[in-house]
Length: 87
Image 1 (cartoon, helix red, strand yellow):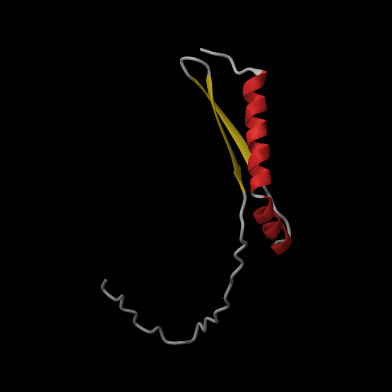
Image 2 (spheres, rainbow, N blue to C red):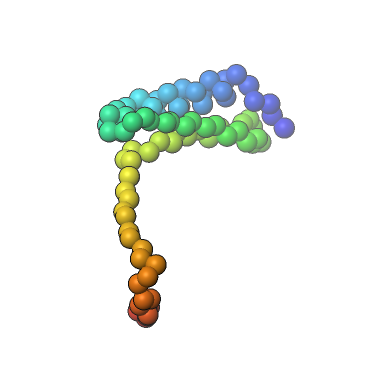
């Protein structure tokens, strides 16, 4: 099995850096629209016959969805029968 060498790690870091720069506009839109922005980055190394396969990725949420509702339950209300519609 081939060892992971400095070049493999450097290539993955460079790839992540380029991805971040390529998404910079989207990252800034997300950052300005939210209270905070978390960006995760990952690397995966797998042996191959001639070296090491390197997979890298970034992950962030572009749009924050914040939704809610309030309902009121009256314990004294008579239950209403509920029939599901057939699909």
